Length: 205
Image 1 (tube, rainbow, N blue to C red):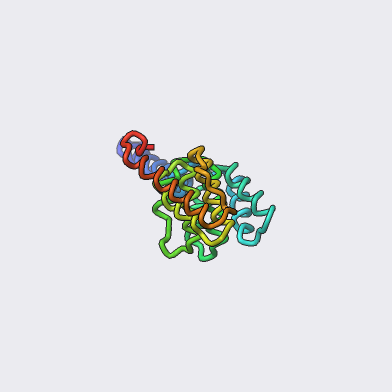
Image 2: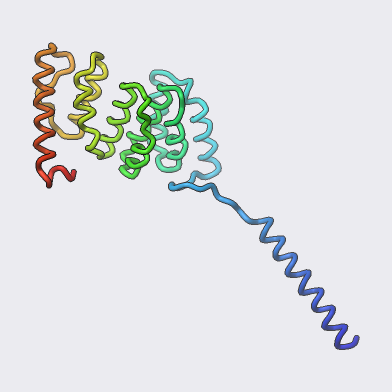
């Protein structure tokens, strides 16, 4: 075979090889979903999807168990839970908030702030505040203090519980107390917050 024929043959082989490599790479390219969080494995992702599908239809103890499960999964479930914050059903949003709060992950605070919808009901906004405070966002404490004045004893009790857990203070507030006693305790809470705000060091917490 002549020299120029050898060169032509090698050229064809090289082109064919390059084409195979390019095709192989393209076929094996994997496009990962964009996320700020650690992604779930295939198996865990399936479990998260199944739990998320069931979430709106759970009640009572089953829902509490689901909140515990999502909190235990942690970061791989964050995208799913944060997506639930745009759901039209208040109970679904509340469950997602409770699950996120139970993780104890303060990195979620900025996402919760951005997701908070001013059109939510008062109770749902208070649930959001409870979640944020639970994760260390003390800017939401004034909303919980206002929640102590709710007409619903259950809401008052939840706000009081969140304040005690975050601050280790009760300031004599009792959710079941008579209105004058509650009002006096709320005034003490507001004074407490004003003092913290005035103290530059404490206000950074």
